[in-house]
Image 1 (cartoon, rainbow, N blue to C red):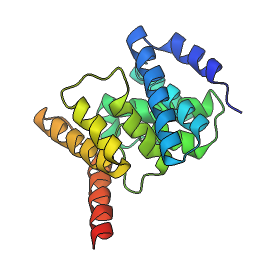
Image 2 (cartoon, one colour):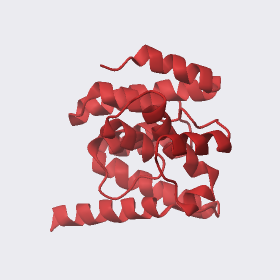
Image 3 (cartoon, rainbow, N blue to C red):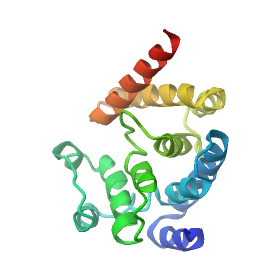
Image 4 (cartoon, rainbow, N blue to C red):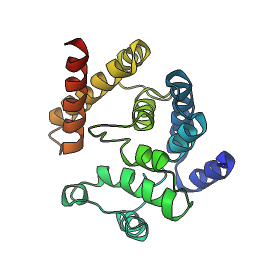
Length: 193
């Protein structure tokens, strides 16, 4: 159904060696998590391969692709380039690669910020991006242990980590990330009541 080799060729041409390797690692992690949690493995691999397809593209090109796909970008997202690539990545997959599967598109769309009521596929790609084999940030071993413990533990830890690190760097915090964290904490407390 999906041509993984074609998508690898697409990102090979669009990304640096570092980002290309990262995308392959995220795809592999996404496949493993999909197998573990009972999601579609091929869709997870596609979303993982393509999640950063627009990461290194100029802002103007990203905005053009978003417009061509009929997608929108909020004023907050326009004000900070870090948020562009998840939206433009989903737009690129839709407009340029003719992927119309909402599971794949939304997994790409929310892989950086997360959001409330995340689908299983969205959570898989979000976590895969955090724990892929190429990652070496300070808490990566803790993050991997949390994901091994459970999807929920990994999601709570990763969203808290994102919020804390963004605040420490005095950068803009996307409201979707806060809503994801609140949704996760609320879901967790509902399970324990």
